[in-house]
Image 1: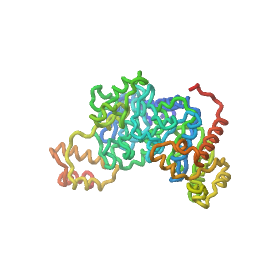
Image 2 (image 1 turned 60 degrees about the horizontal axis):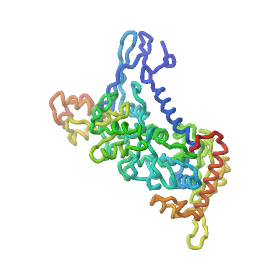
Image 3 (image 1 turned 90 degrees about the vertical axis):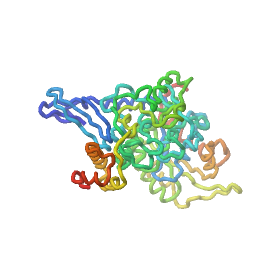
Image 4 (image 1 turned 60 degrees about the vertical axis):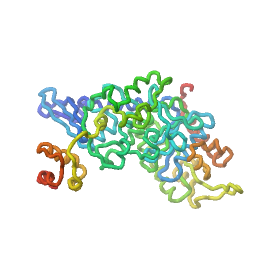
Amino acid sequence: MKFLCVSCDEPMALQDVRGPHEGSMSVIFGCPSCAWEVAMLTNSMETQMVRSLGVKIGGRTVPAEPMEMVRASLAPPGDGASTTEAPAAAPQNTPAPADDPKCPFPDMAAAMPEAAATTPTVAPHGETTADATTKSGKCPFTGMVNDAFEQQQASGPVWTPEAEARIARIPSFAQAMVRKSIEQHAAEHGHAQIDGAVMDEVKGMFGM
Amino acid sequence: MKTYHDIATDGGSDVIGQVTAQRARLNDRLATVRHTVAVMSGKGGVGKSSLALNLALAAAQSGLAVGLLDADLNGASLAKMTGTGGTPLHMGEDGFLPAKGPLGLKVMSIDLLLPGSGEPLMWDAPTQRDAYAWRGLMEAGALREFVADTQWGALDALFIDLPPGTDKLPNLVDVLPQLSGAVIVTIPSGVSQFVVGKSIKMATTLLETPVLGLVENMASYVCSCCGHEEALFPGGNTEALAATYGVPFLGRIPFDPRMARCADDGLPYVAQHPDAPATQALQVLAKQVMATLNETTTETLPSR
């Protein structure tokens, strides 16, 4: 996909990548001639498709690590059967800090040169065995959007079963967007819980 | 106004460059692998994994360096069948070291990365709904990484066990265009051969993938008491199917319940039961397959 500034007839250049948040990425392009900016906003399926290709929007600054897409994309244990809603966003090009308790990659990378003698053991989800018993999650070293799928949303309003049932009635492809909008509405109006009353407040917005 | 093709770059991501780098890494990895062979069938339940494993073991038994890749991501079984399930993977200098299976077999399977042997493969995603849009891409990406990011070392052959479905070979060829050939598995039933015929057609006419031949699995049952051999699935004619599509008929592998027992226990059937008719048939099959591959490949590899 490419973007053209119609006024200048100049190809636009990638300027920034934000997200993913709630499964959506914001990819910002600017015209080098007139500085006009546009943002491409992906839906969750588009984000996931790019993720599946193992490429990094914005380009790579370091080579891909072995099996980085697979290891970073395996669902955490216990997530399998449920439909998971979008996790919190993290800057996609921001490397995990070396002391990140969830990231075993620095140790692994440090051991790689002398692999024959000190090959670190890697358990499922990329943990070294030393980490595996005490740390959860999976290795976030991968590029692109994978980092941002690491963390579950730390906080947010509670959804009542009634509210969940009502949002389930709308088309699935729109649910993440609607859910986010309702949560924003709840935050703006000081609602800690999203129930039928809050849903009624936004009823006119989404036709629920 | 400029069109898509007037603009040389994608704005800065260089997605084409990244994909090219992926391809280069895969090619570098396979530079020391003499042959890559898909073991496939359009039909499920014909014993593809069992045949892939035992074909690989028979080849390894003859002194060849052999790898075995479980490309059936959603029904991975080769880690268990090789006794490598639960084995922690180790990182080498430039990728993951494959698990060490029986007879020196080098094994890689998604099961070796899953948190438990009973865990199904689930991809992390904003939502598991509407996964049809990306699941195939995810599996193709995973397959690429399994081939490219495993330190196979020098191999005479890498056997790739494909899941059932006529679409699986095209997916593999997209990832691995240099595939040396495919061994196609059927059982002697009309239904199986009806579906397998479609796979052969897909391979030969649409993909132009070399079909090394057609194998009839579970061809017969040999009584363990008296040695009498009887057909298990009377009806199908595998030789005729091979002739119809102009592919070699590679032979018949008799059914032996001990093969399933060995798979359950992660033991090498061909070594455990060297005198069994199925072992002898597998050894002949391995020789045929390797001979065909060697006839079609002239390049030499660095010494192991």
